[in-house]
Image (cartoon, rainbow, N blue to C red):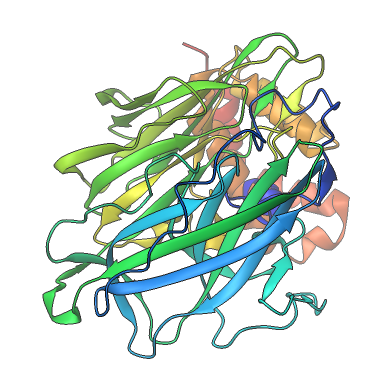
Length: 437
Protein backbone atom coordinates (compact mmCIF):
# COMPACT_ATOMS: atom_id res chain seq x y z
CA UNK A 1 0.00 0.00 0.00
CA UNK A 2 2.77 2.42 0.88
CA UNK A 3 4.30 2.34 -2.60
CA UNK A 4 0.86 2.81 -4.12
CA UNK A 5 0.23 5.80 -1.88
CA UNK A 6 3.54 7.33 -2.81
CA UNK A 7 2.92 6.52 -6.49
CA UNK A 8 -0.31 8.49 -6.24
CA UNK A 9 1.69 11.63 -5.60
CA UNK A 10 4.89 10.62 -7.40
CA UNK A 11 3.72 12.18 -10.64
CA UNK A 12 3.99 15.49 -8.86
CA UNK A 13 6.85 14.92 -6.47
CA UNK A 14 9.67 17.34 -6.95
CA UNK A 15 10.38 20.86 -6.04
CA UNK A 16 10.44 21.72 -9.70
CA UNK A 17 6.96 20.35 -10.16
CA UNK A 18 3.74 22.32 -10.10
CA UNK A 19 0.04 21.74 -10.47
CA UNK A 20 -2.17 22.99 -13.27
CA UNK A 21 -2.08 26.66 -14.17
CA UNK A 22 -4.02 28.45 -11.46
CA UNK A 23 -5.34 31.94 -10.97
CA UNK A 24 -3.32 33.89 -8.42
CA UNK A 25 -4.76 37.37 -8.64
CA UNK A 26 -3.36 40.15 -6.46
CA UNK A 27 -6.55 40.08 -4.37
CA UNK A 28 -6.27 36.36 -3.65
CA UNK A 29 -5.45 35.82 0.05
CA UNK A 30 -3.89 32.46 -0.75
CA UNK A 31 -0.97 31.87 -1.30
CA UNK A 32 0.67 33.48 1.73
CA UNK A 33 2.41 36.82 1.21
CA UNK A 34 5.92 36.65 -0.19
CA UNK A 35 5.60 33.41 -2.13
CA UNK A 36 5.53 34.86 -5.64
CA UNK A 37 6.87 37.44 -8.04
CA UNK A 38 7.68 40.82 -6.56
CA UNK A 39 6.78 43.36 -9.23
CA UNK A 40 9.29 45.81 -7.73
CA UNK A 41 12.22 43.38 -8.00
CA UNK A 42 14.91 44.45 -10.44
CA UNK A 43 16.26 42.13 -13.09
CA UNK A 44 19.29 40.21 -11.84
CA UNK A 45 22.00 42.61 -13.05
CA UNK A 46 21.46 41.72 -16.71
CA UNK A 47 21.75 38.48 -18.65
CA UNK A 48 24.23 35.89 -17.43
CA UNK A 49 27.28 35.68 -19.66
CA UNK A 50 28.01 32.18 -21.03
CA UNK A 51 31.11 30.22 -19.98
CA UNK A 52 34.34 30.89 -21.83
CA UNK A 53 34.91 28.64 -24.83
CA UNK A 54 35.93 25.14 -23.79
CA UNK A 55 34.88 25.55 -20.14
CA UNK A 56 31.17 24.74 -20.29
CA UNK A 57 27.81 25.45 -21.85
CA UNK A 58 24.87 27.79 -21.29
CA UNK A 59 21.17 26.95 -21.62
CA UNK A 60 18.54 29.71 -21.61
CA UNK A 61 14.81 30.32 -21.87
CA UNK A 62 12.65 33.44 -21.93
CA UNK A 63 8.89 33.36 -21.42
CA UNK A 64 6.03 35.60 -20.30
CA UNK A 65 3.73 34.74 -17.40
CA UNK A 66 0.33 36.50 -17.53
CA UNK A 67 -0.92 38.60 -14.64
CA UNK A 68 -2.42 36.65 -11.74
CA UNK A 69 -1.16 33.23 -12.86
CA UNK A 70 0.92 30.48 -11.25
CA UNK A 71 2.49 28.25 -13.88
CA UNK A 72 5.27 25.87 -14.92
CA UNK A 73 7.20 26.40 -18.12
CA UNK A 74 9.59 23.85 -19.58
CA UNK A 75 12.06 23.64 -22.44
CA UNK A 76 14.08 20.69 -23.76
CA UNK A 77 17.77 21.24 -24.49
CA UNK A 78 20.37 18.76 -25.75
CA UNK A 79 23.81 18.03 -24.31
CA UNK A 80 26.88 18.01 -26.55
CA UNK A 81 27.55 14.86 -28.58
CA UNK A 82 30.61 14.10 -26.45
CA UNK A 83 28.70 14.36 -23.17
CA UNK A 84 29.79 16.36 -20.12
CA UNK A 85 31.26 16.02 -16.66
CA UNK A 86 29.84 18.99 -14.75
CA UNK A 87 31.69 20.31 -11.71
CA UNK A 88 30.06 23.69 -11.08
CA UNK A 89 27.12 25.84 -12.16
CA UNK A 90 25.87 29.41 -12.17
CA UNK A 91 22.15 30.16 -12.32
CA UNK A 92 20.42 33.47 -12.95
CA UNK A 93 16.72 34.00 -13.42
CA UNK A 94 14.00 36.57 -12.85
CA UNK A 95 13.69 37.54 -9.16
CA UNK A 96 10.46 36.32 -7.60
CA UNK A 97 10.34 33.08 -9.58
CA UNK A 98 9.61 30.22 -7.21
CA UNK A 99 12.44 27.98 -8.38
CA UNK A 100 14.30 26.68 -11.42
CA UNK A 101 15.55 23.13 -12.02
CA UNK A 102 17.52 21.52 -14.83
CA UNK A 103 16.44 17.88 -15.14
CA UNK A 104 18.02 14.86 -16.79
CA UNK A 105 15.47 12.80 -18.73
CA UNK A 106 15.25 9.30 -20.20
CA UNK A 107 14.59 10.56 -23.74
CA UNK A 108 16.94 9.74 -26.61
CA UNK A 109 15.55 12.60 -28.71
CA UNK A 110 13.39 15.63 -27.95
CA UNK A 111 9.79 14.38 -27.55
CA UNK A 112 6.79 16.03 -29.17
CA UNK A 113 4.18 14.48 -26.87
CA UNK A 114 3.89 13.63 -23.20
CA UNK A 115 3.65 10.07 -21.89
CA UNK A 116 -0.08 9.97 -22.60
CA UNK A 117 0.42 11.02 -26.21
CA UNK A 118 -0.80 14.59 -25.71
CA UNK A 119 1.09 17.10 -27.93
CA UNK A 120 3.43 19.43 -26.03
CA UNK A 121 2.79 22.34 -28.43
CA UNK A 122 6.04 24.23 -27.83
CA UNK A 123 6.52 27.80 -29.02
CA UNK A 124 9.01 28.62 -31.74
CA UNK A 125 11.58 28.92 -28.94
CA UNK A 126 10.80 25.39 -27.73
CA UNK A 127 8.99 26.47 -24.55
CA UNK A 128 5.81 24.71 -23.44
CA UNK A 129 3.51 24.59 -20.44
CA UNK A 130 4.35 21.51 -18.36
CA UNK A 131 0.89 21.31 -16.84
CA UNK A 132 0.68 19.45 -13.51
CA UNK A 133 4.48 19.53 -13.29
CA UNK A 134 7.11 17.75 -15.38
CA UNK A 135 6.68 14.44 -13.54
CA UNK A 136 2.98 14.27 -14.50
CA UNK A 137 3.59 13.51 -18.16
CA UNK A 138 7.32 13.64 -18.82
CA UNK A 139 10.10 11.20 -18.00
CA UNK A 140 12.64 12.83 -15.67
CA UNK A 141 15.40 10.80 -14.04
CA UNK A 142 17.43 13.13 -11.81
CA UNK A 143 18.27 16.74 -10.99
CA UNK A 144 21.33 18.15 -12.76
CA UNK A 145 21.31 21.67 -11.39
CA UNK A 146 19.28 24.75 -10.51
CA UNK A 147 18.41 26.96 -7.58
CA UNK A 148 15.36 27.26 -5.36
CA UNK A 149 15.25 31.07 -5.55
CA UNK A 150 16.74 33.69 -7.83
CA UNK A 151 18.88 34.98 -4.97
CA UNK A 152 19.76 31.54 -3.55
CA UNK A 153 23.02 29.64 -4.10
CA UNK A 154 22.97 27.01 -6.84
CA UNK A 155 22.51 23.33 -6.03
CA UNK A 156 25.77 22.32 -7.70
CA UNK A 157 28.81 24.06 -6.28
CA UNK A 158 32.57 23.60 -6.53
CA UNK A 159 32.90 19.84 -6.43
CA UNK A 160 36.26 18.55 -5.17
CA UNK A 161 38.83 17.65 -7.82
CA UNK A 162 38.09 14.35 -9.54
CA UNK A 163 34.33 14.38 -8.80
CA UNK A 164 31.61 15.39 -11.27
CA UNK A 165 27.99 15.02 -12.39
CA UNK A 166 27.89 12.95 -15.58
CA UNK A 167 25.64 13.92 -18.48
CA UNK A 168 25.46 11.32 -21.24
CA UNK A 169 26.45 12.19 -24.83
CA UNK A 170 23.56 13.92 -26.56
CA UNK A 171 21.36 13.62 -23.46
CA UNK A 172 18.00 15.38 -23.54
CA UNK A 173 17.77 17.75 -20.57
CA UNK A 174 14.79 19.80 -19.48
CA UNK A 175 14.73 23.34 -18.13
CA UNK A 176 11.85 23.87 -15.71
CA UNK A 177 10.72 27.21 -14.24
CA UNK A 178 7.99 27.51 -11.58
CA UNK A 179 6.64 31.00 -11.13
CA UNK A 180 3.73 32.65 -9.35
CA UNK A 181 2.88 36.03 -10.81
CA UNK A 182 0.63 37.56 -8.17
CA UNK A 183 0.90 41.02 -9.76
CA UNK A 184 -1.54 42.86 -12.00
CA UNK A 185 0.77 42.85 -15.02
CA UNK A 186 2.44 40.23 -17.20
CA UNK A 187 6.00 39.33 -16.20
CA UNK A 188 8.75 38.64 -18.73
CA UNK A 189 11.15 36.07 -17.32
CA UNK A 190 14.73 35.30 -18.29
CA UNK A 191 16.35 32.06 -17.11
CA UNK A 192 19.95 31.05 -17.79
CA UNK A 193 22.15 28.29 -16.41
CA UNK A 194 25.87 27.83 -17.01
CA UNK A 195 27.25 24.33 -16.59
CA UNK A 196 31.03 24.34 -16.08
CA UNK A 197 32.79 21.16 -17.14
CA UNK A 198 36.01 19.23 -16.62
CA UNK A 199 37.72 16.74 -18.96
CA UNK A 200 36.59 13.13 -18.55
CA UNK A 201 40.22 12.17 -17.91
CA UNK A 202 40.21 14.28 -14.73
CA UNK A 203 37.13 12.62 -13.20
CA UNK A 204 37.49 9.59 -10.95
CA UNK A 205 34.08 9.47 -9.22
CA UNK A 206 30.54 10.23 -10.36
CA UNK A 207 28.46 12.46 -8.07
CA UNK A 208 24.68 12.67 -7.81
CA UNK A 209 21.92 14.85 -6.42
CA UNK A 210 19.91 13.32 -3.57
CA UNK A 211 16.29 14.41 -3.37
CA UNK A 212 14.22 13.36 -0.34
CA UNK A 213 10.53 14.29 -0.52
CA UNK A 214 7.91 13.80 2.20
CA UNK A 215 4.41 13.52 0.67
CA UNK A 216 2.63 13.41 4.03
CA UNK A 217 2.21 16.97 5.31
CA UNK A 218 -0.73 18.42 7.24
CA UNK A 219 -0.67 21.97 8.60
CA UNK A 220 -3.86 22.82 10.57
CA UNK A 221 -5.28 26.35 10.44
CA UNK A 222 -3.58 28.89 12.70
CA UNK A 223 -1.30 26.24 14.19
CA UNK A 224 2.19 24.80 14.21
CA UNK A 225 2.96 21.47 12.52
CA UNK A 226 5.84 19.19 11.59
CA UNK A 227 6.57 16.65 8.84
CA UNK A 228 9.23 14.02 9.55
CA UNK A 229 10.76 11.31 7.38
CA UNK A 230 13.77 8.99 7.40
CA UNK A 231 15.70 7.80 4.34
CA UNK A 232 18.16 4.88 4.39
CA UNK A 233 21.81 5.20 3.48
CA UNK A 234 22.03 2.28 1.05
CA UNK A 235 25.80 2.41 0.47
CA UNK A 236 28.80 4.32 1.78
CA UNK A 237 28.46 7.89 0.50
CA UNK A 238 29.82 11.35 1.23
CA UNK A 239 27.50 14.38 1.25
CA UNK A 240 29.08 17.58 -0.06
CA UNK A 241 26.22 20.04 0.53
CA UNK A 242 22.57 20.12 1.58
CA UNK A 243 19.53 22.37 1.83
CA UNK A 244 15.83 22.23 2.66
CA UNK A 245 12.87 23.39 0.57
CA UNK A 246 9.44 24.45 1.83
CA UNK A 247 6.72 26.92 0.95
CA UNK A 248 5.69 30.09 2.78
CA UNK A 249 4.36 28.42 5.95
CA UNK A 250 7.77 26.82 6.51
CA UNK A 251 9.75 28.09 9.47
CA UNK A 252 12.80 25.94 8.89
CA UNK A 253 13.90 22.37 9.33
CA UNK A 254 16.67 20.09 10.52
CA UNK A 255 18.37 16.87 9.49
CA UNK A 256 20.30 14.36 11.59
CA UNK A 257 22.06 11.04 11.10
CA UNK A 258 20.69 7.99 12.92
CA UNK A 259 21.88 4.41 13.35
CA UNK A 260 18.75 3.26 11.48
CA UNK A 261 15.28 4.75 11.03
CA UNK A 262 13.98 6.23 14.34
CA UNK A 263 16.93 4.75 16.28
CA UNK A 264 19.38 6.78 18.32
CA UNK A 265 20.58 9.96 16.64
CA UNK A 266 24.35 9.75 16.30
CA UNK A 267 24.97 13.08 14.56
CA UNK A 268 22.26 15.61 15.48
CA UNK A 269 21.51 18.68 13.39
CA UNK A 270 23.89 18.09 10.54
CA UNK A 271 21.77 20.73 8.84
CA UNK A 272 19.37 23.40 10.11
CA UNK A 273 17.40 26.18 8.45
CA UNK A 274 15.20 28.85 9.99
CA UNK A 275 12.91 29.86 7.15
CA UNK A 276 11.41 28.76 3.83
CA UNK A 277 13.19 31.55 1.96
CA UNK A 278 16.86 32.52 1.81
CA UNK A 279 17.59 28.92 2.72
CA UNK A 280 21.27 28.27 3.38
CA UNK A 281 23.19 25.71 1.37
CA UNK A 282 25.46 24.05 3.91
CA UNK A 283 28.79 22.86 2.57
CA UNK A 284 30.47 19.93 4.32
CA UNK A 285 34.23 20.20 4.04
CA UNK A 286 35.81 17.86 3.14
CA UNK A 287 32.43 16.07 3.17
CA UNK A 288 30.03 14.27 5.52
CA UNK A 289 30.84 10.55 5.31
CA UNK A 290 27.90 8.18 5.85
CA UNK A 291 27.93 4.40 6.16
CA UNK A 292 25.53 1.90 4.62
CA UNK A 293 22.84 1.03 7.15
CA UNK A 294 22.61 4.50 8.66
CA UNK A 295 19.70 6.79 7.89
CA UNK A 296 19.05 10.48 7.43
CA UNK A 297 16.21 11.70 9.63
CA UNK A 298 14.84 15.08 8.57
CA UNK A 299 11.96 17.27 9.66
CA UNK A 300 10.23 20.36 8.31
CA UNK A 301 8.51 22.81 10.65
CA UNK A 302 5.50 24.97 9.84
CA UNK A 303 3.37 27.74 11.26
CA UNK A 304 0.15 28.63 9.47
CA UNK A 305 -1.90 31.77 9.85
CA UNK A 306 -4.43 30.61 7.26
CA UNK A 307 -8.03 29.56 7.87
CA UNK A 308 -7.87 26.20 6.08
CA UNK A 309 -5.74 23.08 6.53
CA UNK A 310 -2.77 22.91 4.16
CA UNK A 311 -1.51 19.60 2.74
CA UNK A 312 1.36 18.43 0.56
CA UNK A 313 1.21 19.75 -2.96
CA UNK A 314 2.94 21.60 -5.73
CA UNK A 315 1.31 24.99 -5.77
CA UNK A 316 2.46 27.74 -3.43
CA UNK A 317 -0.93 27.35 -1.72
CA UNK A 318 0.24 23.85 -0.70
CA UNK A 319 3.31 22.81 1.30
CA UNK A 320 6.47 20.83 0.64
CA UNK A 321 9.16 19.14 2.71
CA UNK A 322 12.36 18.48 0.77
CA UNK A 323 15.95 17.74 1.77
CA UNK A 324 18.36 17.80 -1.14
CA UNK A 325 22.03 18.17 -2.00
CA UNK A 326 25.11 16.81 -3.78
CA UNK A 327 26.89 13.59 -2.80
CA UNK A 328 29.22 10.88 -4.15
CA UNK A 329 29.69 8.14 -5.30
CA UNK A 330 26.37 7.97 -7.07
CA UNK A 331 23.77 5.50 -5.76
CA UNK A 332 20.33 6.01 -7.30
CA UNK A 333 18.52 4.15 -4.48
CA UNK A 334 20.03 6.53 -1.95
CA UNK A 335 19.41 9.68 -3.97
CA UNK A 336 15.72 8.90 -4.60
CA UNK A 337 15.07 7.34 -1.16
CA UNK A 338 13.52 4.49 -3.13
CA UNK A 339 13.51 0.71 -3.32
CA UNK A 340 14.34 0.67 -7.04
CA UNK A 341 16.58 3.65 -7.75
CA UNK A 342 14.03 5.06 -10.19
CA UNK A 343 12.83 8.63 -9.79
CA UNK A 344 9.30 7.43 -10.54
CA UNK A 345 9.50 5.45 -7.26
CA UNK A 346 10.63 8.46 -5.26
CA UNK A 347 10.26 8.02 -1.47
CA UNK A 348 9.23 4.35 -1.57
CA UNK A 349 12.25 3.50 0.59
CA UNK A 350 11.32 6.03 3.27
CA UNK A 351 10.13 5.53 6.82
CA UNK A 352 7.40 8.04 7.59
CA UNK A 353 7.56 9.21 11.18
CA UNK A 354 4.48 10.75 12.74
CA UNK A 355 4.59 13.64 15.18
CA UNK A 356 1.42 12.74 17.13
CA UNK A 357 0.48 10.25 19.84
CA UNK A 358 -1.38 7.47 18.01
CA UNK A 359 -0.06 3.91 18.16
CA UNK A 360 0.86 1.87 15.10
CA UNK A 361 -2.33 -0.14 15.52
CA UNK A 362 -4.42 3.03 15.63
CA UNK A 363 -2.71 4.39 12.52
CA UNK A 364 -3.17 1.10 10.65
CA UNK A 365 -6.88 1.08 11.43
CA UNK A 366 -7.11 4.70 10.35
CA UNK A 367 -5.41 3.97 7.00
CA UNK A 368 -7.74 1.02 6.41
CA UNK A 369 -10.79 3.27 6.55
CA UNK A 370 -9.26 6.30 4.80
CA UNK A 371 -10.97 7.43 1.61
CA UNK A 372 -8.43 9.96 0.35
CA UNK A 373 -4.74 10.79 0.40
CA UNK A 374 -5.50 13.62 2.81
CA UNK A 375 -7.17 11.15 5.18
CA UNK A 376 -4.12 8.88 4.98
CA UNK A 377 -1.86 11.86 5.65
CA UNK A 378 -3.79 12.55 8.84
CA UNK A 379 -3.39 8.91 9.93
CA UNK A 380 0.39 9.00 9.48
CA UNK A 381 0.99 12.49 10.89
CA UNK A 382 -1.08 11.67 14.00
CA UNK A 383 0.95 8.54 14.79
CA UNK A 384 3.73 8.63 17.39
CA UNK A 385 7.39 8.57 16.29
CA UNK A 386 7.99 5.00 17.51
CA UNK A 387 5.15 3.78 15.28
CA UNK A 388 7.11 4.74 12.16
CA UNK A 389 9.11 1.54 11.65
CA UNK A 390 6.34 -1.04 12.29
CA UNK A 391 3.78 1.01 10.37
CA UNK A 392 6.12 1.30 7.39
CA UNK A 393 6.84 -2.44 7.55
CA UNK A 394 3.17 -3.42 7.38
CA UNK A 395 2.41 -0.97 4.57
CA UNK A 396 5.40 -2.31 2.62
CA UNK A 397 4.28 -5.90 3.19
CA UNK A 398 0.74 -5.11 2.04
CA UNK A 399 2.02 -3.53 -1.15
CA UNK A 400 4.37 -6.43 -1.86
CA UNK A 401 1.61 -8.95 -1.23
CA UNK A 402 -0.84 -7.22 -3.57
CA UNK A 403 1.55 -7.47 -6.49
CA UNK A 404 3.14 -10.78 -5.47
CA UNK A 405 1.88 -13.55 -3.21
CA UNK A 406 -1.71 -12.29 -3.24
CA UNK A 407 -1.91 -11.04 -6.83
CA UNK A 408 -4.54 -13.54 -7.95
CA UNK A 409 -6.58 -13.23 -4.73
CA UNK A 410 -6.57 -9.45 -5.03
CA UNK A 411 -8.92 -9.59 -8.02
CA UNK A 412 -11.58 -9.64 -5.29
CA UNK A 413 -11.58 -7.30 -2.29
CA UNK A 414 -12.64 -9.92 0.25
CA UNK A 415 -10.12 -12.60 -0.77
CA UNK A 416 -7.42 -9.96 -1.09
CA UNK A 417 -7.81 -8.85 2.52
CA UNK A 418 -7.73 -12.44 3.76
CA UNK A 419 -4.57 -13.22 1.81
CA UNK A 420 -2.79 -10.06 2.92
CA UNK A 421 -3.66 -10.67 6.56
CA UNK A 422 -2.14 -14.14 6.28
CA UNK A 423 0.93 -13.07 4.31
CA UNK A 424 1.66 -10.10 6.56
CA UNK A 425 0.67 -11.73 9.85
CA UNK A 426 4.02 -11.11 11.55
CA UNK A 427 4.11 -7.45 10.50
CA UNK A 428 0.53 -6.95 11.68
CA UNK A 429 1.36 -8.54 15.02
CA UNK A 430 4.42 -6.31 15.40
CA UNK A 431 2.34 -3.23 14.63
CA UNK A 432 -0.37 -4.20 17.12
CA UNK A 433 2.23 -4.85 19.80
CA UNK A 434 4.14 -1.60 19.25
CA UNK A 435 3.72 1.00 21.94
CA UNK A 436 4.38 4.70 21.95
CA UNK A 437 7.40 5.63 24.04
